[in-house]
Length: 507
Ligand code: NDP
Image (cartoon, rainbow, N blue to C red; front, side, top):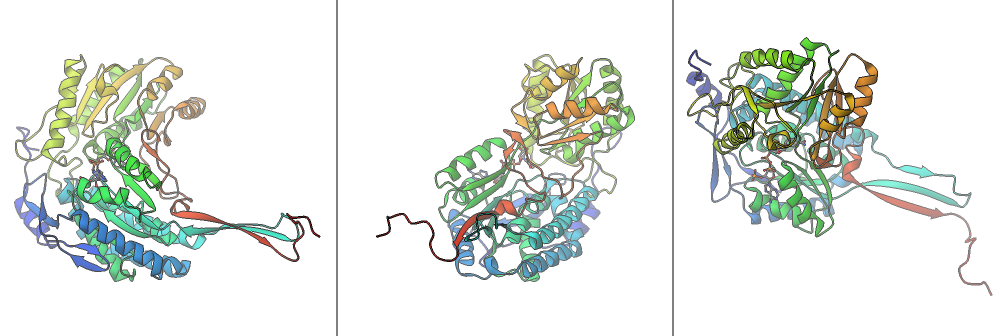
């Protein structure tokens, strides 16, 4: 940022970055690269330059991708491969992601506006998840029962569920598809993937890596385009067995309703309004750093953002004063600059929505402590913002703003803190800051959220499951059950020896 608050952008750096990968990309259907009649042009939200042109897939493309996935499942080899073969392919994909780390990071950075250093970390994280899925592939197993009598055996097989539709949002493009696809593949499923039309490049590039790694044709199909055209058939077509969706609660609800007509299994990772509860005995320096990180990481465009600060009244004022200093020191700027911490927001429409949330909160009597304004007229940058004096009757205390905006509320007792934490329809995650283990654990247990961090924030690892309570989602991703989620159980009852129990009287 310059002294007058404008963002300075390095155009030479941008040209070098853009020259590193092709702007025109194709979809992947049945092992072939497919174009469409129309393309969708994606401009960098930071620079305004064209980054990629991806096919505007139609419902026909989605249907032919579903047909390819169905064929690959019903008649192809992938569902019948050994765990060893499947895991080898997944490990090769992980190595290829590592090989192309810089390209993939540049694609995600330029299409989404996120800082390049952060994007690199996400690509590394994605490769790690593919390796974790490869390990789980070797562990996939059922159960057996030899305690049913000497003439009876029972066993339960885990079989791949079938064709899986994978629909992903724009905020963590390669990372989120990597929380789903490798586990579905590890189970032996075939897939149709639809990334957000704004951030399709890294997912399409992944399509090439899958082919290079030896994944058979038709096992993973990638269709780009808009939700109502491409995503809708993926949630309603009878040939699809499961829908794995990450996105907003509103679209997730519609996708789930569409899937219900044919009773598909669904996995939904949706929004959040995640509380960070700070008690007076917390390590304040650490809590302040985590609160700053939680509020502004990925410009707040993060389902897990710590967007709701719940402060004990005794420390609230000092905490907010220090947080304001830290917010003002966050480097907002060119996503290609290695030191940038907060890049551009995803789109002008989205920036407008974030600003509207802040305006409405001010009109409702909340107090804007810092930020609240965009930092340049053309790039979509926004100042890290703190809205204090918020009460539970204000819309901003409950709505997912999805921007660099944190709201602050205060509490007096642990019980009040828990009640405040639970006072939204979401339940994705929460963090509790206290040196007192009793407080930390009992408050954490009271909060209805899928993840609770204690004296840390937004740590993640594939070993631990992730997902939401309430309207933050259905089901869990990652963790030791991540492959099981993409399976059906088949029960075998086996009788050995002569029949011992006759239904009709024996004459
Ligand atoms: P959206 O819900 O708008 O879109 C998500 C995906 O669904 C996109 O690929 C979109 O396509 C597609 N889609 C849109 N309409 C339909 C439809 N009718 N049928 C099927 N698919 C459809 O979310 P955003 O992309 O705006 O992402 C932001 C949201 O994602 C936030 O609310 C955030 O909280 C949530 N999120 C949740 C996470 C979690 O794990 N809990 C993680 C990351 C984000 P298109 O964009 O092309 O129209």
